[in-house]
Length: 494
Image (tube, rainbow, N blue to C red; front, side):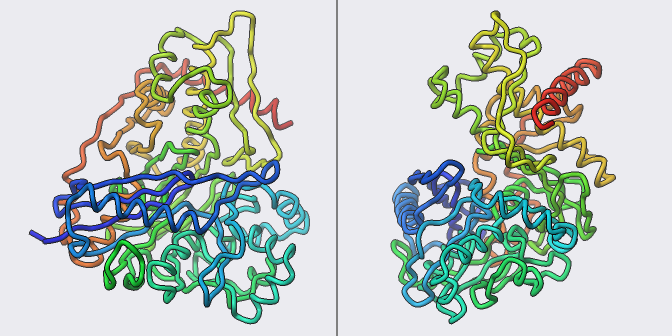
């Protein structure tokens, strides 16, 4: 039996989490801390990079205290992160040049439309598997250099580091020594050729990015360096895994082989299908990204990125104030026997896959005098499942792969009404993991495997249990659900 523990750092959109796992894969200590969200203008979303570092320091310290282990017993660290969010910092001092621009930020919408109108998208899609959307990192980076000429001059002189949040964390964890990222995060930047697995000169030129700012790229299971001068950790702990959060959840769910799929119900919904070594470029609104096989080596995956899922439940709570907490939506939804023709489209920051319409805003269709609070809550939950249904069907058609079941995780996966409806709409079994933090578990598992802490993946995975939801809805009812949804979306976008 291996001795020691593995630490997972899960740096997310609304907060940072640290989890410590023992040799049996059992959670021994965990801590979470939210940090401030900045909205300086409509459509803009920012984080303070220094607050992110501070939050990570604090959750590691609290997780160590809770676990009652010595910090010297940590054998390896795995890092997983919110993807597409960018940070620019001074290579010498390590201080950031202003706030991070978050993946949700829409400020580059006009630039994306211009690049699309200029005819660049087909060539970019061929290399990156992505589309022009403010979601991805590359246009954010060009915006920074276009709007801050002094920063551009510093970048050309080699004084500036660029990175997604994993790179920012690695730089500070390693004592300002290592500037690197992994393939999964690089594949989200619009700057990375996913076939050649390297930064692309033509893409850098298109987006006005000096090559000097870029991090080194490595497979997710690489050795990324050792800790140095990062409290509360001792120096010398190896960092053996970097992974974007959704790829980490795919790995955490044991989806190592072609045809394996998972969906994470977080702020948004992210459905990934493992393709193995086969690169499939979707022409119908899905993106192609890099994920990991059972050893952490790169494989391809199709992904559907839905921008608003759990955030719609937060809207019911914080915006409309018709619920007190997210957990009560299940019982409230069950109080409405039907929603009639009520359809909620939660396009608060535009529509993601398969439409990629950042200009569209949300709407509610089919309201009558008889519409109740319970019906609106139920229709909002329905909107999450319907968005997943639409991209799931598209993914099956585009890949030619029969998806045997869908593994699920994330906060909203605890809602049993939503999970049963999801199975009903998909016509496929939905398997909910008993691990509440599949993303952190994926990063920890890969780090533990990469450093030899765990040698048998099958044994580690055997500790995970699943609750199974079996489809019960008739085909005709399923078709009616989807028809109402598509009619409402069509009305909104035309």
